[in-house]
Length: 195
Image (cartoon, rainbow, N blue to C red):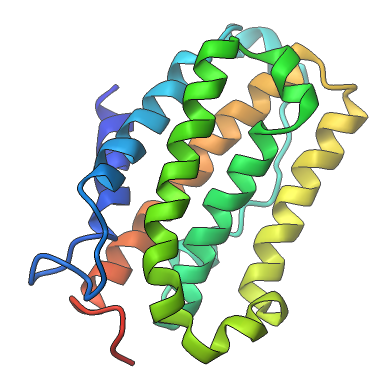
């Protein structure tokens, strides 16, 4: 549980720099939503991880991208946003409704949507004119390819309970790996508007 809480705290760091904000308003709710979303993912566990060992898969999480130093500020922010958007989309599919507790799933949807809305406030300021090029950015395409592999895996496994459990664990891992990216964004300065 401590690991989950530290991940959530790291996610929140993206919204607060040394000066207290990033130059655009991100509510304190972003921190609370991030923490709650990880708790929800943790609570959604329905199966023992050991019972699904045969279904494990390396989805190719682009760790060098989310944990490395090669991304510029606008790219890093976009990767973070895209990871949250793709996570939201993954758990919003019709098939995911059959796999999870409806109440927990709806709470996760609401929390992810709120995080995206909070980040969206700053997204336009960070991206500015570059927003039209967003779909062409290699880091974004890498994130989309990673999530497409997850969708393909679920389809291949016919959306089995074990497949969904493997994906749930992978989403916890993906959000955990984004911690370094979030810390890096924070270190880039207190103002997302600056170059």
